[in-house]
Image (cartoon, rainbow, N blue to C red; front, side, top):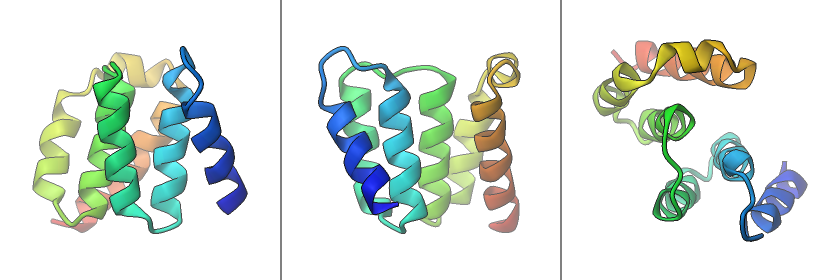
Length: 105
């Protein structure tokens, strides 16, 4: 995971890189337990224009891991489900976040 984090960090620094790299970096940082770093990555990607369901799901993931399940649920409720259903990666992330916030009830 450390190597993946390093790779996605480099990819995210390339101008005009798709937000795929930013999302991958947030997920890897979360998997490694680096939730504060994931929060900073999310903030930077958002500042650079990351919007939409993918950003919302990643924000929900970070919130859930920060111990804020209620806020994570609020963001999750705003996510465009049809966009999620068209993208298997987002569907998987939806499932992960949903399990996390269900556990935090």
